[in-house]
Image (cartoon, rainbow, N blue to C red; front, side, top):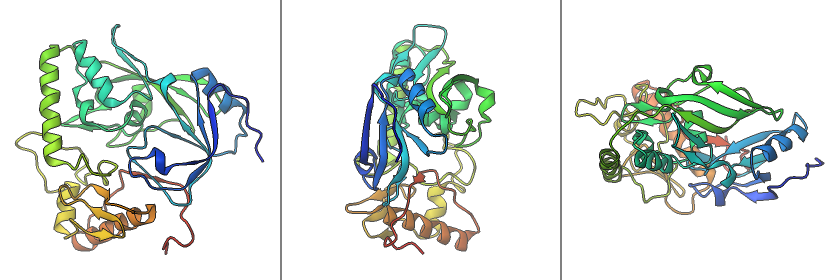
Length: 312
């Protein structure tokens, strides 16, 4: 039995993760901690046993929590971590700030972070995943990131210390992003807003934004995101190799590879986490068997499977 420290935020036992993720699946977390602010988070982590697992999450936009739930502590950053400051030389955003909000507020201030507008989720996740679209990535504009280590220390890291690559970064083990500093190019606010409006229209035209998904399921085998340009090549896009394998529209239980965009694994109603993950694995096998290409998951999958969930 763990004696949890006193906190100013909120500690909740056996909190349902299905209610906190876009896919609406998954078992409970042993404990959910929602810190009031950075100091609350630091003190909490410093007082926890070093061997107790800790998992940070944002709004659950790129996440499947397995049906058996998550052991240890899930840390979900909220209002104390969502400030956005565009008044200085750089744009500084809290880890819980929504990517779309950062893009909009920056544009209003004449700062160009427009590529964030169509990316679901929060700044913390965007940094961890080196989120990007239309040829732009977090790595291109990040100056530094502030993290709280597993030991409760507040540390600032320069962007080059994160060793960014396509859809990944390397943070110190157990570190939790609490804010990020961006070098946002100057731009005309009206032009930036117009650009984001066009980006949203294109996204809504091509992606199932009204369905229950977690964003792109697999990384593009090409090793880069769509550029949005007329000369964009699709041969090694995840959706294209899924289509080539005949898996667009494939189903398992309540899970489906979306008909509108086949790289969007979708909870069409009543899916379990096992349905979703197992369908994804079927797609990966079919793509490999038919084309010799290994699809890598972009959606993070965490937690334990239930014994009776069909695991092999």
